Image 1: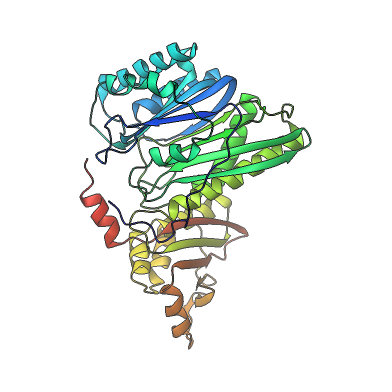
Image 2: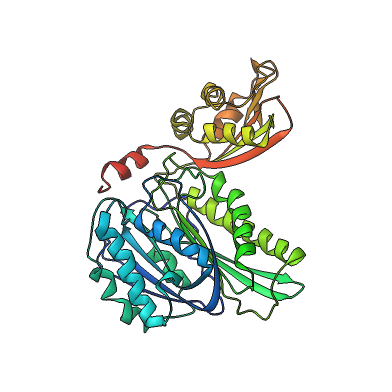
Length: 406
């Protein structure tokens, strides 16, 4: 059992129910802990769906199925299992997805292409479809609109706390609700979104608009976090809009309000994932300013956030800012060395290409010894900026992953 993250919330969040969305969980034996590892979500007819997935060339069978289903633009159910990634499991893995989808489709009277699948856990371990299919009728009989908190617990693997949040949003067409769930603590270095995350809203939104909103929100949230630099085979972000609110179909300014709320919700979930990074003792914010382009600002920030040397120095409470210089240099971002600057906790350590001599070592050591670390870098090459969030790299991370079954 992993130690609870020092950043874990004091109490478990209770997400708001979303009209038309119902949850049921069960243990089918995929988790060694024996806890619930199977989640079924029922969605009403006409639910629109959007998704973003891993760019891994070894994507898991559930990811392949979701991609194939997405052009249809509608969903009736989501099935998620944790403890086994169903990745690199060949024909048996494909059979798990399709037999499960067919069985759920029979229960709900819909096409198997309206059933979405996701999985997380150990890669390369096959299991029989019956392990899931045998529990579906029981799950369908226990669906509950207030099951969001249990759902968030069920999808956890190395997470030390469940992650969920909700928003109530006012539009000119009426009020809407958004509720999001996420899991993730390792294999977090998103090229899009390295985790499982499911968002439900009662808004009426056309599938094409829903996808555009999700793309925007994802780029401003999950694409700005990193834990360990590894991208999972199973990254899945799905957004379901049931259309059950009294508000009319969102468009124009109302759609912009929705996108802003979705972005805010995903940012909160993304930061919860970083704050539950495997072995975390410090939460790190990396700000890069003065970049030539937005892309170069993000590249430099990601290079700093992803550097094992930077992250281990921070784990040790050491203000070794030379490692930040190294990380920027390898990022490919344009740098004006004569004018570049670096701050740690607002304290200048490099200015105009030179080290800063000062008598603030006590303040600097106090910041590095704290739990929240702030790195600021000015590349002095332009006006673009970006921010990435990460955590330190500790002995705890090594212990978790040295003994995780693969």
